[in-house]
Image 1 (cartoon, rainbow, N blue to C red):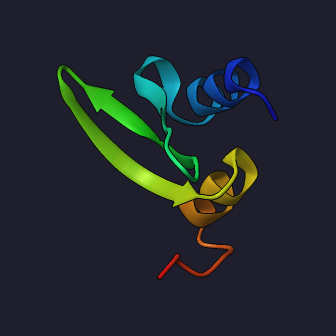
Image 2 (cartoon, rainbow, N blue to C red; image 1 turned 90 degrees about the vertical axis):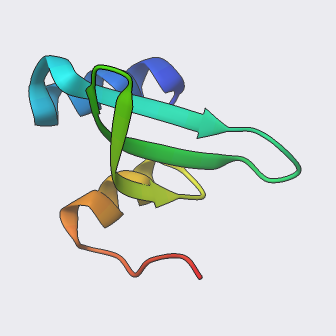
Length: 64
């Protein structure tokens, strides 16, 4: 899943407030959730977009 697909999925799940964020660094970190003004409420995070959405669904264990 690429960034555009992830944003589309977030909006499908949570409406216009659906939002994604990628933290780049030595290892990328992917966050999905909802944006309320300037606040970002994370519903899932992971090493891939798919893992982040799975965590949002409660289908995977959280990262350590």
